[in-house]
Amino acid sequence: MSWSGFKKAVNRAGTTVMMKTGQIEKTIDREFELEERRFRTLESAANKLQKEAKGYLDSLRAMTAAQTRIAETIDAFYGEAGVNDGVSKFYRTAVEDLDADTVKALDGPYRATVLEPISRFCSYFPDINDAIKKRSHKLLDYDAMRSKVKKLIDKPSDDVQKLPKAEKDAETAKQIYEDLNNQLISELPQLIDLRVPYLDPSFEALVKIQLKFCSEAYTRMAQVQQYLDPSTREEYAGGFLDSRVEQVLQGMRDLSITGMSAS
View 1 (cartoon, helix red, strand yellow):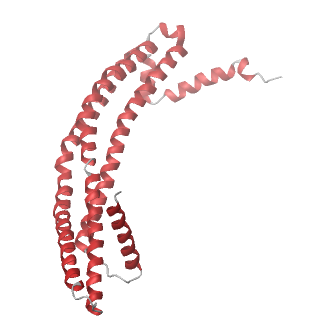
View 2 (cartoon, one colour; view 1 turned 30 degrees about the vertical axis):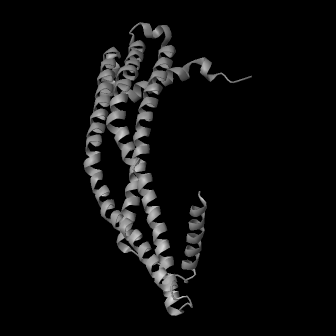
């Protein structure tokens, strides 16, 4: 920070303190406050959307990676017994293909049509916040000069040039503040209104990508079913699978080895 910038920061800090103690009247602009609140709502929602959009892609990768790991484990669990019908091998192949083909193929389009546009939208926020911060500084400068003019009117100085100079400085500060304030009041609503037409294409792409993934996953898992025991499929469809599982568990409990206690 330059020496000039440092002095301005000190003066503004002093003005803020004097406002809090009632020594300087603070300008209230309800119109700007409303637009700033609307912008803060948009900023919060957009940043959350950016985070969740990235989280979705990460979760998709994590889910298919977990499917691959569980498929490998199931295949190892079946061992030689799985060779008879090939179901564990086919399941493993299906989830590996889903991870390798579908998710990786969707990665690029998802980034290009969903993640990057949302990130670009959010990238404008720092500049807007800088403009809002600058407006706040210019308003402090204006209120400080306005207070100085009032004091010189209430208690005239022996130097007759002080009041005209203070009035000129106050008018200059007012013009700088109002130009920036009017620009923000005009453009913030335009930014907020643009959010829907801007997001629409990404929203459509998101739905299509999700549909593509779900369709591919369903197709691959449906193909695995043909390798399952037909009686198992029928029992599942008829709601009798629980009783079959219970029968198997009872058979395990009947084994002497499961009832052995440690000596």
